[in-house]
Image (tube, rainbow, N blue to C red; front, side, top):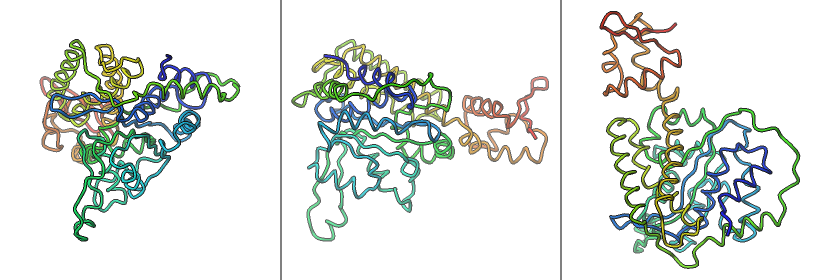
Length: 385
């Protein structure tokens, strides 16, 4: 049986000359993770089940083609399972209603074209605050949602869990400048929803030369639908890692511990790498028809993909908004003085480690916000007018 991931990406490369090439594989992973849903899982040592549902964030300028995946996904999935996709259902109330109707076992796909307002909803006064919290809870293994708790309590009705271990895949679209503003103050990062996403970026750079191609045929859509839905295990199946896969996964976890010590400012992103790698590995195992087995290749490939996307996210968090937020006090001081001793970075900013100081100041220098100079053994930070 053919690979859905390969079939989808190769078809989109041939027929879709508007979407960035970088988006095809993440969209295919999102689609397969949501359709497989709760039918495949693996178990962590603490007993928590990990499902293949993933969160994907597509970052690109307006008009770059972030939403053009809808045509293909509608042609593939909706004829077979129209209830599986929620397009732009951006309200807490609607999603909560879907969770309730799903009798506690929701899986499927949810997509949002304008996702910034949801990611930025970090305060209780924000309109999308409850939706932000709902999506964050749904991501976790072992999650239990008790929707309408206060209302039930006031009415004297026993509080019953409505959703346990949902397996819903989320896809969001956002322009780069909007995401940069979110990760700048770090509030949206520390809140926790952003680091749960696999982030794929693109630019307005030139795509391959456009050529006319006939629309994707219904037969092609049907073939891709078959490649997708025939992969779904008929009964809920546990996928167990081989010894080699377990050893590889242990290596992934230990490497995260080491990186977290060296780069504590990125801990929110790094902490999610093992589980996200396991989710992608589970999708790959299902697509490769390894019934009930995750092998070393799946873990290695899943980890490599997640690392690529995590580096994109960390790169964005080190962008202008993040740097300006970190260095606000220092830059203000430099407006009144020609230069300050390098060590003043620890007095004038929240930076506390040498590694973070080096990374942030290097990025600021590349952005022409300041310069680092030396006089003998002493180093100085010089303002740039």
